[in-house]
Length: 327
Image (tube, rainbow, N blue to C red; front, side, top):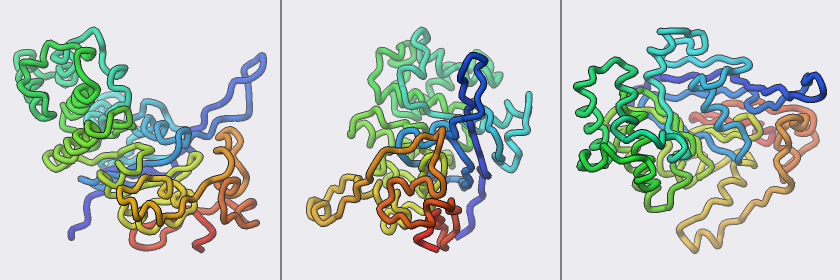
């Protein structure tokens, strides 16, 4: 099989938010939301970024879209240094990178009709006004809202949650990007609607050769949609690799704990599976533990874990893990 082209490369990406304390609002402390992550994403593939709330997933999404600027690190997108681009060069490349938000109502302007919402990307791209209705109708058809004439003049509050998320997908797809970041895009939907949206995203990926970075805490979604998965804990990636291999043989204790808490549709297998319960709470990203950041909750902690921070190391077959148990 031909090696797929890498379209996104992230290297040692960091985002530290300085804390404002005291009368003069100065502090040497900061929230280390993303603290040195590296990964790559190939064309036509889906990578899932998973972990508990507060681990840095959504901050990573904002960094990739340059909604916020990183403290340090590099992002290469379609072969270009994305962080160095400015002006028209940035606007031109940004069209290839879009986002689908979690909150389907807050992400759509309540005062505008679907026609106006979906026309905006085309207006920004200089498409003639006379062509807008046809292009918007085509988008509505693509995401399963047919016939388009029924929806063109509706407002977001007149739609169901699933329909609003289809509009979010349509808006992201308007300018035919190469990469779409989906930030918890199906977490607010019920099970049946979630399955429909995931199937829609798979179909659109095949049809337009899309790549997805799918940010989620739902491992069942990861199993259904993703090719690769990266597991984040307290601002760092602790394990990454192909979904099938990580789901069948997770190496990092944190990944093992996450998977042990995932429901299994087979009752017999569910009874046989041993649940790994983590002790304690997630430490503060303001003052992460010395050494391995997971050592305060790890059932296999060693003395070395309390002093040294393990590096994310390749283990073959595309797998990488940051854990002294596997050295």
